[in-house]
Image 1 (cartoon, rainbow, N blue to C red):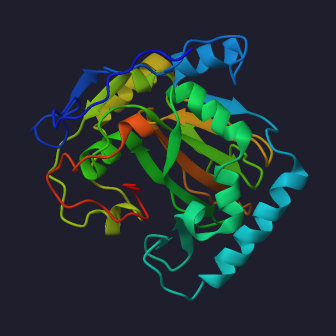
Image 2: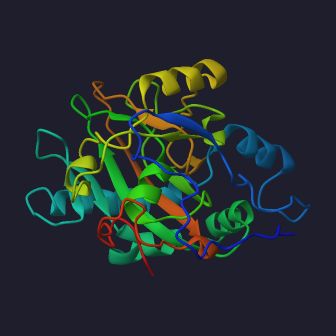
Length: 298
């Protein structure tokens, strides 16, 4: 049974950020799980409660090796195709030419379009978000061995809110591991419980910030004191497992990843599901929206 939700139709800013001279920790104003659990839910009661408390859920072996083999082959084909081909939706490593991310794969690629509509995934997203959903953003991430760069701590929602105009915290990310994730090859780290607070960041966003932030983010990043407080309260988890595992994490949970200096590359398919009742408005920064391949406005 889905709980009643209020659809935001005004420009009221529930989570102001990048407008003050000092950072601030604000209380979350939205539910984490937007449905009441029942026997027919797509997650168990224990899984649902864990996600609500911690802001993430790791599901080992969600897809079989046979299922992910086609995705791995397509990933290798795309990486090779864009190695020397420039495209706006292809992001390269900071200070280098290695492919870091390929965006909008759910629109530009039939194989990943089918994955975005996978019934098991969609059922979980609709349960957690309490409504029908759509893909706000999709991408393939590559982190090569030896020189795959880190990505600093951040809340996705802070950027999606300020730069894209996402009104409320009613979205989540699904990261599908296409290679084994080890503690030493730059996996995602999360701060459990950090999704219950919103870090209002400092620094006015430059125009066309996305052109640099997708390589290395410097605006919309949390301050050290807020990060320290969150880590002291919740610790830091590093969910790792075999290829085929998935990580679901709330749009506001604090996360980041270390660089990969191991010989083992890491890659994943990353899809953001947003509630159809939480579609984008004008960016709260007052600037022009980021391109559709980064933030779908349909």
